[in-house]
Image (cartoon, rainbow, N blue to C red; front, side):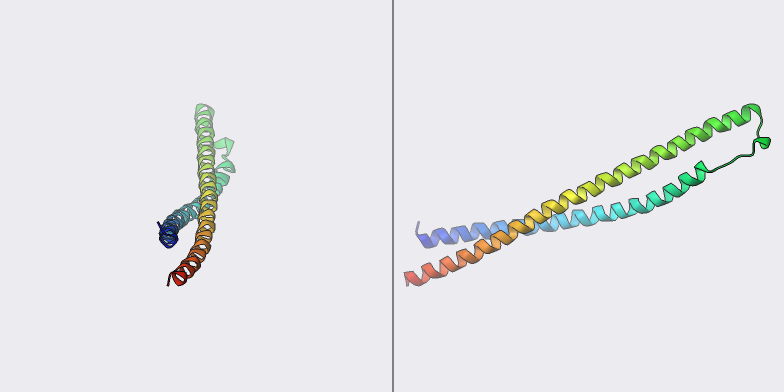
Length: 139
């Protein structure tokens, strides 16, 4: 295989790599956008949940209105409910943290693809120059 045909084969490989990188960058952009929307929604939900949690925790019941078994039953339900709200809030926080970590990981991966694409573009420029030199020498 001649030097010129090798250079052209390398150019095709680089172009395929560039197309693959662009496709991966696009896929990652879509993932990051969806995850950012989900993270923003969870942030909003966390604010609302914290507000609900605060109102539940600050709930006061006049002891004079409750007597005996009814008060004990209410207290048991109230403690269970507070625990459930706190548990749910923690699960939402964990989900948001996981999503934010995914966003960070995908952003890093996307940056790597962008850097790789830039390197491939530089390689393509070099190959184009080498091809033009080889074509001139072959004339």
